[in-house]
Length: 55
View 1: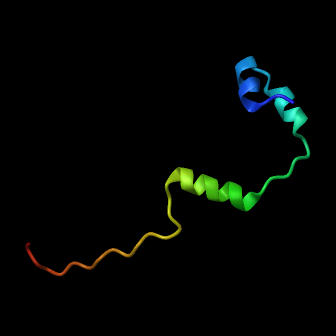
View 2: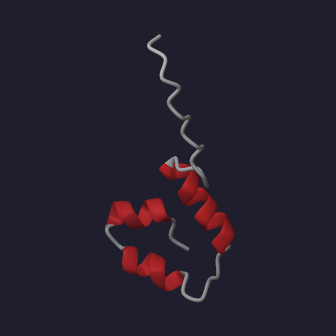
């Protein structure tokens, strides 16, 4: 079985994909990985309200 690195170096992604047809991944883990790579949090904290001071 060809690794992704080998497929990229040899320019043979078709073989890499063909060897993995039918594989099922973990959707939640994949999405969690993408969120962490994007640096996004689930919710942004609320902004503080202006208090009118000129500190």
